[in-house]
Length: 256
Length: 236
Image (cartoon, rainbow over all chains, first blue to last red; front, top):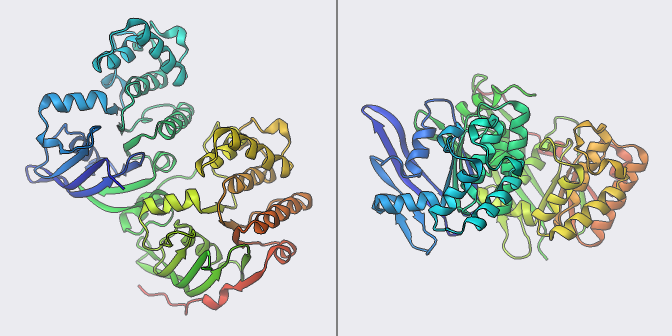
């Protein structure tokens, strides 16, 4: 296989404290990788390193660009990294307010991403925005409403539409269903699962919710104190955890 | 011709870190093969390790030692050492699994659950839909239920959706973990017919059947797993 993204010995320290240490893996196109662990385990640090928002103290992140060249993210200029983030990548934040422009209409939020990749045709942008609203199950009659008028679940679906409209190859998700009602979560997970499969997206998903990891991911990395302590096929890690800490995590979940 | 499945020297033990590091051996020295077009049944009492063997073969449990070679006719793969990606590919194209219980995402209609499994193994959306309908009809699931999510179905109805999903792909090797446990006589017949039909086209089966009558009718060979029982030892 030809990986899309490779993490090579990524480490990040905050003074004497370990953010994450010597993390290495390869992400294939279309693969969904879940990073699980408790708060403070280094999940978010790792996500920020992988997406170039944070520079590692050692190690590298290599990404295969659309033109086939593989580049170390550190070697990209700020402008190149921004272009990558707005075209080939998506970011789904736990709090939709960090991923949406709250003062702009739903249609504008989707259209802005398209204009960012050079689309200037108003009619086509609006048509595309309509189609995506439908795809994420938002009433297209709401296209001119602002996200401030949307429920939490709708905001999250709008954030997903905004991210996917440019057909990225890699999407970073940080607790995408965190903070939502359970009934809303199930529907959102089903939607994400369908879109990821249909579009063949590669995803790096950070979550502390093992049920979300089971439903969405192919593979799991378990983090503790900045280290990856166990990795493998998702259902293997969850049904036959090898490490003491993973056994504790899995056995601490209340079965519904 | 190579066997579809070749298990050799397989052992499985659980290491329970949260319980004083207890090592719980389940099976040792498991050796057997399954050929194309045959149905091999694992026999033995509850707790003998039958399900653990199936799960290790599917890659759901990590084998402690030994080899589990699956041969798709091109490149044999050892499940014990294969990468997650290689196991996912095997599950998509070669090896299917029917568990005792249906585990699905809420909200998804029964027919869609089955059709999705067919699509995942390579059928076009149209073919997948047709396959799903034929399987559910064969398993006597009332058509009025097809477009409903199975959460509210009876145990037997859920199990038939589960079986349909397991048979939806074109896998040449299927693992069956008590698929007929919650079915009535007519539906057991439907499952037996389905197994016979697939055996005839070369599909290999490895299964556990609690029901003695079903077992006798589908099994070409039975392997008593008590002969793989480890010498029981509780080591801290």
